[in-house]
Image (tube, rainbow, N blue to C red):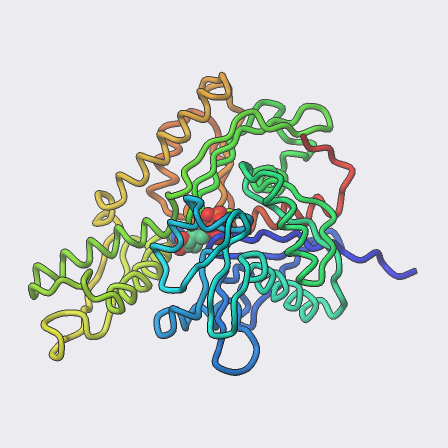
Length: 387
Ligand SMILES: Nc1ncnc2c1ncn2[C@@H]1O[C@H](COP(=O)(O)OP(=O)(O)OP(=O)(O)O)[C@@H](O)[C@H]1O
Ligand SMILES: [Mg+2]
């Protein structure tokens, strides 16, 4: 008898997306052709040929920003006059348009596409990468949404899946999926409330979940839609800009393309500094007056970023404390804190959470894929009840 088709667990993220399945009792990911499971949530509309998704699209953000769409998750099921659409519009080179209460569209050289259509290109790419990797067709998925997502976002996700050639069997919230991946449903799990601290690329989500019998409930939800790894990159880039100003008196923040290149280097060096205490920092043509610029080549130490990042870390702690209060709990009532999302790789973030909350901090090697893993896990044991 042929094995039942595995269900793809899909985490469509603001900055990165991941798809995962459970097969033979193990997690397997859809990988891009670099072998990465975290695929940039970026879509590029080229002059000719098929739409590009992921790293290939990401590379074109600097040279063709008007036709390269990033951050689309924020505006799924949102009209043009929503706060999320306004923020995306002011932060992006690509053009948004909308009529009345219908979903915002992006205007590209390939035509006009609704936010859901753009998102469906990302989901289709994940499906195709999964099919390529597993050598079989994949037609069913569980998708995750932010815990605060309303019914309109959930309905949009079902449509996005359908446009991508997938039947969406279930929608679950990201922190619940993350908590499942971290063993909330397992026999060894605590019955005390857990705090899921999900610090991603664009948002921080803090959620208190609890397993009670066979059911998982959400007690309180908090977060900040404008606080994530991107802000760490920006704070780092401003620190570098001050350094260049001190060296040569040129203000790199006024040069959009150069400042963008600096932010990309900051993102890479930020990742390196999560692993080691110092890292080389290199940006060509950055120092000096336009036309005669020389490269910036230096070493950045982890402790140099302590102050630039302190305000961001403090804000994340304030949000966390508020969520605990909103649940009517004291920090000591928590069973544990589960750190998920790529920004929890940053040692300063981990240390700050551990210092503030006197409970077990549940860390893992791969916090960025936890949400997709949780969705895949639920796909493999759908009897679990969620509130
Ligand atoms: N090793 C690392 N050290 C520091 N930051 C990292 C590391 N790896 C990834 N990140 C950061 O994690 C962020 C992406 O995390 P994640 O994929 O969890 O976000 P997302 O799901 O796309 O966003 P959101 O949850 O806000 O929708 C990026 O800002 C990235 O730079
Ligand atoms: Mg996420």
